[in-house]
Amino acid sequence: MKGATDYEDQGDLKNPVNQVIAILPQEADVERLVAALHKAGFASEDNGILSGRKDAHKLDAASGRQGWLTKLAQIGPGFGDLDAGNLKDYAEALRNDETVIALSAKLGEKRREIADLLKQYKAKFINSYGMFSIEGLG
Image 1 (cartoon, one colour):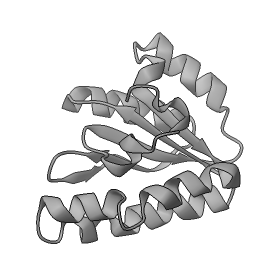
Image 2 (tube, helix red, strand yellow):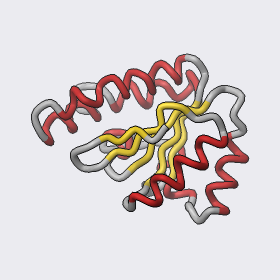
Image 3 (spheres, rainbow, N blue to C red):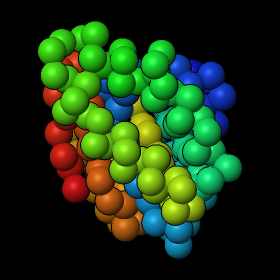
Image 4 (spheres, rainbow, N blue to C red):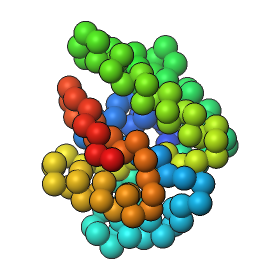
């Protein structure tokens, strides 16, 4: 996720393959979570964070006609529909001043390690995105 820390180019939002994405509540200590992720071996360039209403436009732009849902829909029949509800959850979380965090993870055990860390910070809607699947991790 080269430089995805603030999702300026929205490229990783459009294509969440090999990512774990979750919603953190307002009261979550995001800086402490990021420090814990670094301690566990996850580099800054491997994560992206959107926080609250100020970043909602980035998700909105990525979910437009040229965004995430369109790209996913092109992968295979019905795949975009499978994920549409998740995207709505992420957008709603941002409107409610919550945080959406995404981390790159290709290996299954890394995805579970990420999920376990996120749960310690009261994350919800923790999903792992593969090429053709979405796995709920918490």
